[in-house]
Image (cartoon, rainbow, N blue to C red; front, side, top):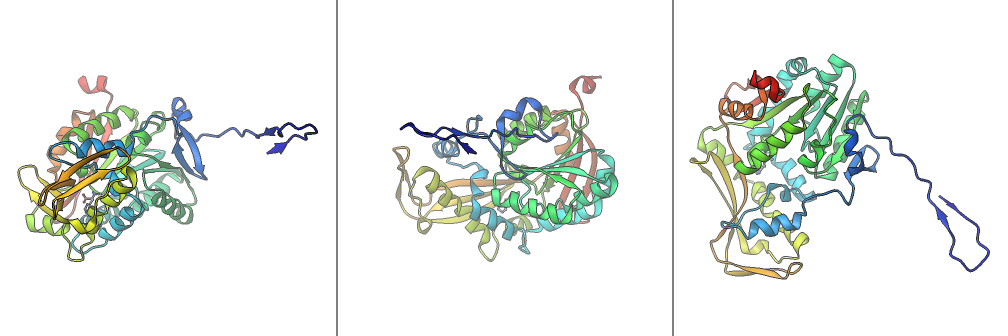
Length: 365
Ligand code: AVI
């Protein structure tokens, strides 16, 4: 920055040295304007890029009947930390099982998907991706790795991890919601999109359709998708995973109201609610609720709105759908995603599914 000298009473003129941002091959050229480097190797959406306002999403779904919330509000800094701890719980078999599968199968997955870039949706600290990165570096020497996450601390942890363990890998963290992130990735760069942890289970049917339509649209003809999906199994095993003995899941779910109070000026109180969860067989999903323990008035001071929350009334905070892998493969073929491989563990509790994008014209013939 240079300051021009001034002799009169005028304010100094400040010249700002404008530096040209160099965008990585990762981004499609038409999307460059949407991104700026928030810090080295971490990109954020420009302020004026169209984004959903989280407070508005909360107000919209809390005024639905029954009341519900979108899962991404769970991941403020404390929520992200609590989720990392849940992944280590003995009852929460998902992370360990999927990790075992990735350890066993990453070489074969990378062999089947000849890509130059791995884009992970919601990577957290990228611990699970280590096996894929290892295989990618072993088979191709180098790679781009781009996790997309709403948690900045998670992206920083991922960046540090990759720097230390994979110096050959070019890291670009995208601080954004999944859809804002993946729709900016260049279709010309052969990419493996990775969506692990059965996060797809947290989408309701409408969000599921929207997500896969947009993801498939964003994918180029040489792109692949690796999806981790938790399977329908014994109800006791499922229910224990979402009602752990240490109460971490309850803390994680009810922590969302702390985030909501911050975003909307509301007065939800942890002392006036409890956690309840269970498996809904008809919908094949675990449902996680906040239950009001007293008649109360919830006021949203930033919006000049309020509602009465009666005793025993429930807000559906999160669902976790459980899948039949063959059915999931059939469903995704309607989004031009062709099944390439299916890996599962000895108990058949969890599935890793590999898909390839086929262009719609090709799919018709
Ligand atoms: C991130 N997601 C896949 C977790 C799940 O299992 O549905 C979130 C979670 N909620 C409670 N425990 C874990």
